[in-house]
Amino acid sequence: MRYSASAVLVATGLAMLGYKGINQPQATEIKLAYINSNVVLEQAPGAAEAQATFDREVARWRSEVQAAADSLQEMITTYEQQQVMLSPEARQERQQVIMQKRLEYDQRVADLQQVAQRRQVELVQPIYDQITAALVQIRVEENYTMIFDAASGGLMDADTTLDITSQVIARIRQQGGVEGGTQN
Image (cartoon, rainbow, N blue to C red; front, top):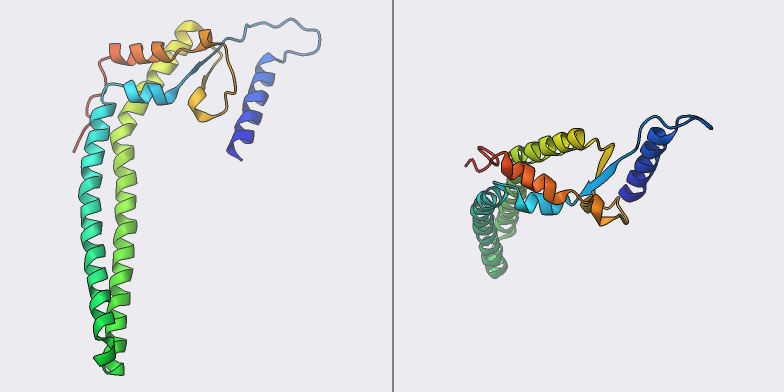
């Protein structure tokens, strides 16, 4: 239950920040804001290019996987058509070849999924780093105690005047976007 754990963490954090002891005046004001990270990521410089690069690479990997799947299916279909004419030894040999081919196929699919995950992180990490830097700068400059992410599900309702999504987008655009975010 990710939601309840994050809600508990937020509540605990707010309680720790706000608690100064019974009947003691609070020394600092708690100032909160939130962003919608989905909107920030969609509009971040370099994000569309990184997504396009990732989509092209994934398309190549999908075609490789589809060709292997087609080859495996053709092998199975041929075996099914010929199995009645094969000797028991030949049937067993073909079944083993098919099983080996299926194992190789499954392994290649798993390998490509790992490659895709690593590549996605590689393409998006510079964008995340820039967004994080912009958030930290804004938090410090505006004296925010905490900045929440509405897209993460922990924020149930908030005053829209606390939404600094557009400010974060403007900051990362002002900083010139991400260099190298669309490496091939």
